[in-house]
Figure 1 (cartoon, one colour):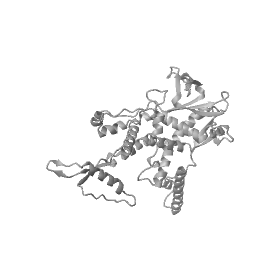
Figure 2 (figure 1 turned 90 degrees about the horizontal axis):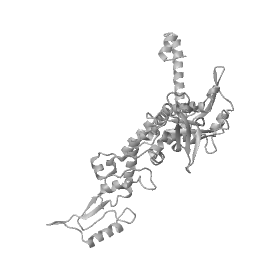
Figure 3 (figure 1 turned 30 degrees about the horizontal axis):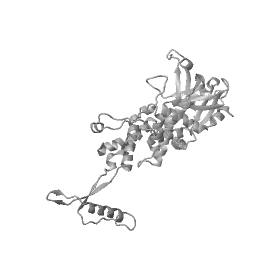
Figure 4 (figure 1 turned 120 degrees about the vertical axis):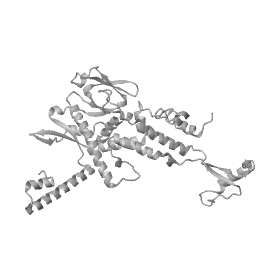
Length: 410
């Protein structure tokens, strides 16, 4: 069956299909391409990991967020005499520095955030000798293999175990391992369709992810399977129209073109022929397709959804050191720190520290971007204090007026 050029390219864009593939994507039909009535979206259901691992823009945003999140340092606090103090030689901090034999603190934290970002849920398991004891290990269970077994009751219950009966993990051999409700720290992205189950944010990104993958696929076809880049033909005409080149003349031109001409040393750069020839290019300017602009636009959608800042990612222009520093600060303040506060609140309850009046927190005060901000605030306060002393000595303002004028709360 013969294909038109656009049908051929469209058929090649079915690279998501087959044995060694990522996601099932329908093959374009000619009617879909020309009438534009049926957009084609990458399937997300049960393919979250494949989409994450093979979409570079999505992967980079989630990994950047996970890396920044893992910069946090765990702290253990308690209240003594109405004052907040750090717990010294905390066995819980030792556990969190090395949660299990496979992962250190950073890897464990990144793993939890990645699973939540990809699957919409994370499941932390504590290996504990008996209830109330300090766990000997903490693991992140694979969210894509977890199943929540509900009790069938939700709104009239006050305990989680009255809503969730147990959790089941299907291992790689097909066996099922059961976990009690109090053994698992369950976190999720809220799902308006179900108050128990989390929902992957990749569903909200289905359209930009599809466009990114389509743009990369189109570029791949143009680069690797475009065929001839053009055609040299005879432009001579007689009374009956165009005159084709004879086989002998065509072969001579082909041999000369390959053998004598090129950009290498010793070859001619300009083709000289006694024949009346013309060049017809087959290529289409990639920039006119605006594939790069499409990918950039879709990347911004991913950045916004995950609460990050566009200056943290590769840009052709517009990114400066000041923008990068401000982007990091905003990402930490608006995204990373709130996520960390929510997770450590759940972790505190999961470890049973809340009943002791103690809690776990993540500290990011050592991060340079946040230190720079604190330095700027300190310098501003210093200037205000100097202005306060100068103006107060002038006798033109009283203390209350100066504090209001300079915005001082001292």
